[in-house]
Length: 342
Image: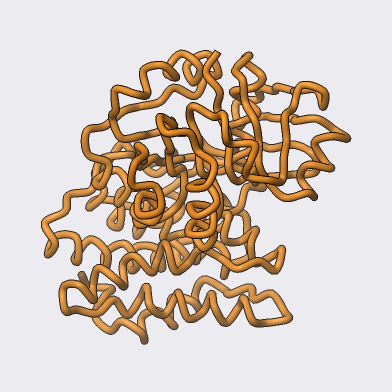
């Protein structure tokens, strides 16, 4: 049996690893001691937005806090936060066997490059997790739909049955960059959701918050056109149409944007969860990617830059901000005059 290791047993890592283990795959988890203690006491309880449930008993879970648990892995899924990628790569470089395959299931665009620099003799693949996972109580809950995406590679053939059996099939692509940018465009809402301090469904149901997201997306789409990058179609409508949809009145959006509202009522973005827990967010690897693209093109991205500033201010604040939609929209319009007309 091929051995799979999850490096970064947080919400995403525990959910994917738990689903694989629940279906009979050989899986080990590497994470913080706090998560290990929870799993040893309660096991791995999993659920999704469709009402399905799974459970892995504590004695069936292989959990470690040390990277040595990855030394016999055939496939390693890296699910740590982007800020921890360099440290994860350095640790894995010391223990991985030569033919191990590594997939980055992380936010942002640059994590695979960081991993590859530390693991030049290993196969490192770009991956993408489109759905939201919430660690609620002792349950890891998938709050939205989507399938795992990964760069095509012959070495993955040995693992396709594992993911299919777990109900998480790997969708392979020759070029992941359009997929990654399409996901990042959607993830630009993470900072807005974190600043709103509301469940995703509640936030996206309000026009002013959607207009904030439309501003951030339009700015990114303008830069992508200049860079000649065409985002993939991850939603029923093309990426460049989404800002228009976001600007329709609330009642119309509940009908036309019903797919975007297929979210559990209490689900929040991972960035919102990070702020609530007092952790560093991934805003520099999400909105920051737009700012870096602008810099490469000799341009600016004032809307996304302002969202980064507001999130970093919230990280330093002792009081969690809860921006009203109208106030946040006004702030972004000041930052990027004229962007509302793009």
